[in-house]
Image (cartoon, rainbow, N blue to C red; front, side):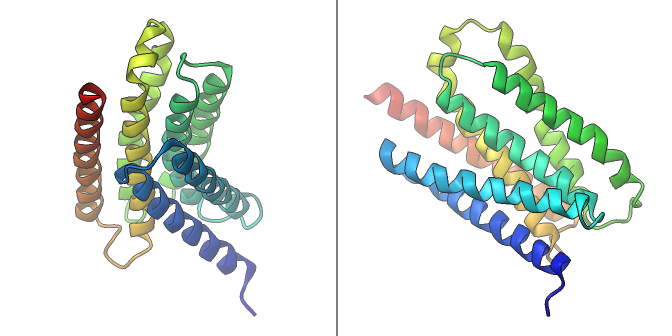
Length: 212
C-alpha cells in the first residue's frame, strides 16, 4: 500500500509538471483567445491542486515546509499574471489580498526552511525563487500609484513576465526533486533561461501589437 505522504508528494510533482508543460505551451503558442482561455482554466486547476497538496503536506503530514514556500513563490506570480490579463483596468482588492497572503506565507514558512540547514539540496530553489518573486511583489505594491491607462497598454507584458517568473520558479522546484537539479548551477541556468524566454516573448508581443 502506498503511504499517503508518498501519494501526496507524487500528486504534487505531477500537477507541478502538468502546470509547467501547459503554461509553457500557452506562452509560446499563438493561440486564439477562446483556446487560450480554455487552456487557462485547466492551468489554474493544476495550480489549485499544487497549492492543495502543498498545504496538505504542511498541515496534515507536518513535513517539508519547502512545499509551501516553493508553491507560494511559483503560484503567486502565476496567479498575479492571470489577474493582469483579467483586470486590464488596474489592480483591485483581490490583488491586494493575494499579495498579502503570499507575503504572510513567506514570512511564516521561511524560518522553518532555514532551520532545516543550509546543506539542504532544496535551498537553492527557494532562495532563487524568492529573489525572482520579490521584484514581482515590489511592482505589485507600487502599481497602485500608476495611472490607469498604463494597464490598458502594458497588461500583456506584465502577464508574460509574471507567468515566466512563476514557471521558472516551478521548474526550479521540479528540478530540485531530481538528483542534480537542486544544485545552484542548475537553478541559476533555469532562472537565466526564464529571463531569456520573457525577453523573447515580450519582443514578439511588441512586434505583433505594432504590426497590426
